[in-house]
Picture 1 (cartoon, rainbow, N blue to C red):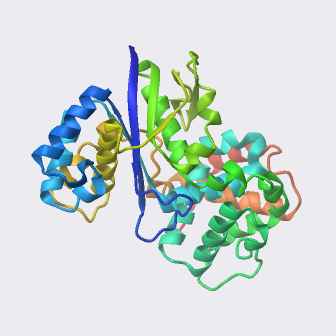
Picture 2 (cartoon, rainbow, N blue to C red):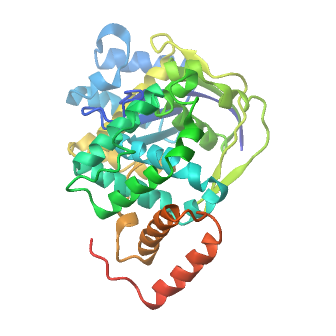
Picture 3 (cartoon, rainbow, N blue to C red):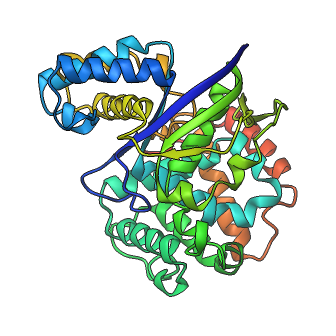
Length: 379
């Protein structure tokens, strides 16, 4: 393991708590390992070579033309091997937040069991498909949910907790809605007094979670990290989780769906919130972040989009948030099992039965049953 690193971060596609923004579908947070001298030299070289105006590298502006994309590519090649990026589909990220705040409170005693079965991905992908398909009920539920998570005003959750079913609502979406209605009290108790207040105002924002994931990944390569981030309101209002990592030398991992993922790192000092006009490394991270938003947009098919897309496995970290339709493939026994688990949870809720009591035995039973007699479900 190498000794220490200065890492520079910036984002592309930022819309704060508004994950339903129609024109910004992807959020990217990029990091580059460099130092002040190298970053300054590279930025000045790119500005002079490509005649960039205003004396600052802005990725979104450079992407508008072939010459600018060439400039970004030169930056990427110069830093290759020292880049990590987290990128998220915002609508799917919102679906994941929905699971976290609507399903987790009633299931929290043994939520690791459900995560191990990818039940969270099953529910999140269903919600994402409903939202993309523009189901009227799904749109209303998500708009209400997003508004509530920003404001903390429970009176806005009319669609989520409404018992009136709308035409066109899929059977599984009905089950999800019914689960929320039946557990309204537990859900409200869990999030009351947190969302919409202080750091809770930014609970849907992706900045802090993606920054933490990137630092945890870099912590596997370097013993000590110093982080420089372009100033943002979410980071300025809540650095508590990062401050706990100052001087931390423990290496702790968590198991996510069978994969061991790092959840600690060692910071030399608090996160440095800086001005990108002054700190050149942040400008480089800005260019990288913009490039991979561009690459992950399938509508872009020019040579640079394709070139950067071929680097995704190299630079995009695990934990980037994208829908995966494999979790909805009803031919798979694991997906059939999650359908039955959802139905069982709703039935238990209706009948006042504990959601967690011997649920592991139920899951073992239906797993064996499905092996013997798979369901013939229609997509």
